[in-house]
Length: 65
Image (cartoon, rainbow, N blue to C red):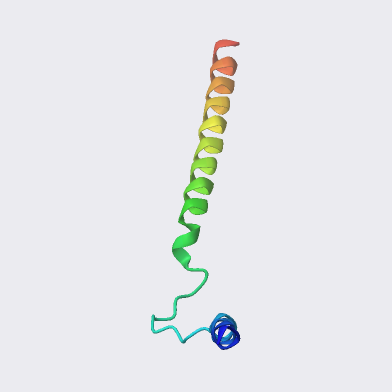
C-alpha cells in the first residue's frame, strides 16, 4: 500500500499536470525600459558636461583677449 502511494506521488512529481494558464514569453520589451532610461540619462549627462566644457572654453577665449 505504501509502495503504491509512493509510486503515485513520484509519478505526479515527474509528470506534472498540464497548466491551464496562458503562455507568456520569457523576455518582453518592457524588460528593457530601465536600460533605455539609463542610457538616456548617461547620454544627457555627457552632453551636459560637454556643454559646460565648451561654455567655459568660450568664456576663457573671450576674456583672454
